Image 1: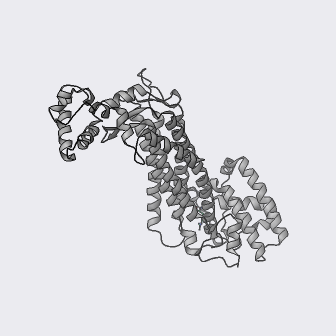
Image 2: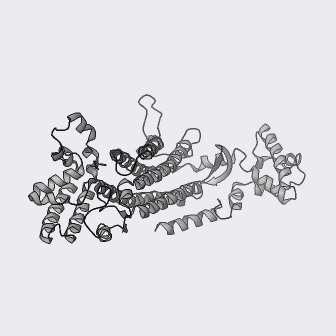
Image 3: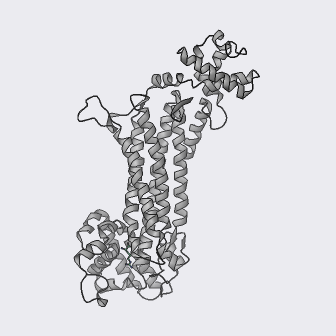
Length: 457
Ligand code: ARG
């Protein structure tokens, strides 16, 4: 039965009911709705609506319900209640009779749903932070194992300068660090309790909302009732954090797909995260990475959808807001899955060090070194850049690496080149020289790994 029988003479049409009901997705808020209800029952004692004894009976019944819900959340879906709030209330009435009907005094589903979704989001933030940390730990572990794997670094997807596979791993550790801190920021801002705001204007019972907030594990009560019931910033912030992190994961996946391609052959992905072709027996496709890249789209879609849903809404609550749930549920589930899958992908990865080195030696990725060498011999950088450009054109023509040119060949372009050039052009020297903070020198990378391990503890 609907919650508002008195005002209506006709039942809702089945088609409207199906359209309007949210139980099929908001059943996921059952635990939060029950915990919030226990908190509210205590507040009702303080304003004389419930006796201690009544509150005890309600609390025991609600705790029972919590146990049932935890053991089988899907069972809720069998019911035809409109939403999770009406479901909890009707189950409570089944358990304790008409005492259950007192619980909704001074409360509205508007402050109730605002509370439930905030509690749910807070819990998910803490979980997601753990998932982010797990992926970071796996990246650091992979970096540690692959400090000697030299490979080409790219700009414009053209070989640019040599880097190590470890340095590449550590770049993603940094991105995820920012994702983690965005979650922390969002958590702080969402840590205010809207319960006790009523439908929109505040509750008519003088409950101590700060105490209620504390009971429900919030840092403080919200300050304005209109804002409390219409605020969905926390959802939008989480969607935006998820979107940006999915963009990071998508770039990770794209790098992996390129590294795993026949053309690059830098890494081999494990059989456990790849699939074969039904037709072409030789194929081993990077589906896990492609799906991570693909799923970024739907997470960003949820963010866009939610922004559009909220943008034209007058204060305070509007039913449009019910549309917040499927998007945030799906987006956070997806993000969590992808964090886990990225961790799993790294778990079985093999870096083909001969191939990465061979590629690093090609593509004239030591050309900057030669330019710096000429600078050290007194040639102005702009001139040295030009000289090296001409040298590279020549080297391409004779199909040699810069390090394979003879001194006579070098001297066609600059007479300052001496025997000491060969040392400078080695891969090791290219790496070692980049020793300023954040650079690819093996020493700096080892430090970065050690520092990250310390941070992740
Ligand atoms: N199912 C609703 C939602 O998710 C709960 C709030 C209903 N409030 C109302 N005034 N109809 O937004």
